Image: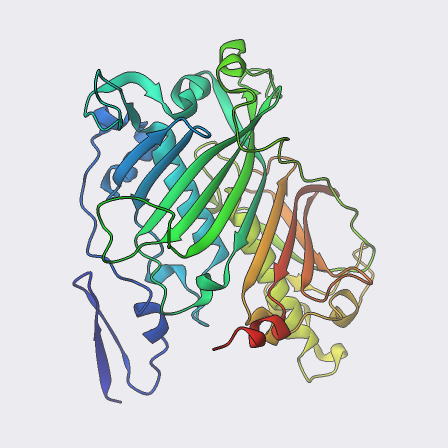
Length: 399
């Protein structure tokens, strides 16, 4: 079979059989050259665990105090590995890109204003001054993400809108007693506009709102934010309340799939990485749809058919048709793309532990909404809600 070579602006190429050019829409979304080292370890103050961030091509780092404390920067975006075999951006890649961009923004020294430097463009930096004083805040504590939300725009699924690099605006949101909430907007870059980071006229790809909790390293429980932090930032954010997602009940009728936490699923704390829960959820949803839509009689499905999956209810000995757990969601709806995702992290999960990921839809709820619970020892450790774009809504916006 004749192979077709696709050459990209990053000076590397992909070879694929000419009869199966599934990479084409992805290639059109990548528009940058190879990244270069622009931030040194000393300059950024990054820990050894984040040394890889030195190699990100972060540009145009800019701090603003008004109307809310915020950071603007340009960073690498999604890559060819960020898309699945349907050419859809992976939720896990969106989450990881958001986290890395936040890490750079929180660790990078803020340029210090000098006399006559009204634009805050001086190269002079304050050694310990970072956005939200994050280095100082996190130095003696663990930081636990309690909840996060991703809202994707239709531009996220437009092949003609570049996904690399990205402009990010990171805005302080809210300060509580033990928690901090922030908002990050990610925009497609204009190729002709490389000098400044600006929201004006750019395509918003996604917004990430999240809340972190300060954890005492000894007690491993939430602890009060320092008084100096509250005095400096309380009441100065863009949100009038914290970002709290309430737990929801898990019904008796679900489809579930078991997973064992592997080394590759964990983070530097040796806890399950925050993106792993989203991957489990996606895999469980697709496993359920595969079984539900399989033309074979349900009795012909064997335990080994679907890699540790089963059609289980609340009890192990209860067999339930997947169509009862997912009566409305379809592959056509999934092909419209994710519109919104909300994730609540409730408890820790460690390497070697086994979890069950449950998926279902609520009676009377919109057909584009899917719910998940990751369960360990009969306790929910993570809960997720996913909304997809409606099919009719997408069709109305097709040019």
